Image (cartoon, rainbow, N blue to C red; front, side, top):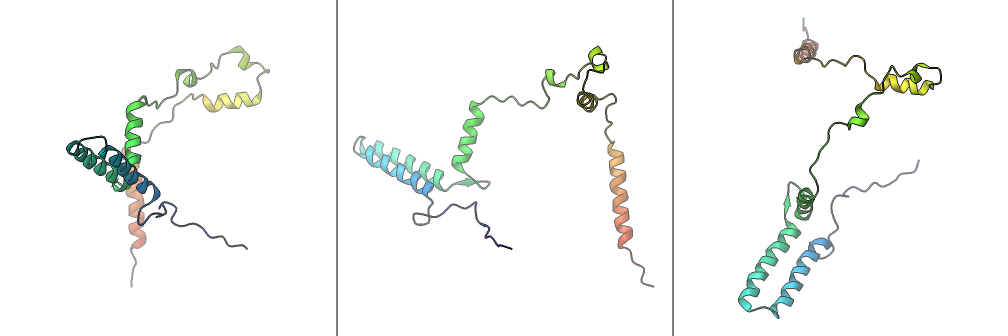
Length: 157
């Protein structure tokens, strides 16, 4: 049987430039280039303020992680959340949830395929399934715990 080597650390990015990944280096280099270009355009005091802001933002984009997620991914998710609509549907639309009528004459005729009849039986519920009550769930949970405790008891006579 042939053996294959499975890659192990697929979540980590390769360190290309020093101890930085290519993305981290790109953030730092872009801020440095922009700061260099602004040095010749702006006054020194204003350039210094802009450079400090650029360097802090580039360093945070490159190195800051929150809950294991990099800052660019968090910012992208935040922008996507604000721009896209926030309509979350948990039910089907009314056209899909309405079961077909059982009293339709065409369904009672022999012209209906057996597959369609099976589909109707599966999708049409006459009696809803009742949910188990919390007391029944707790009773079954207590019963399993008691069974485990009984199994642990050993008589050493």
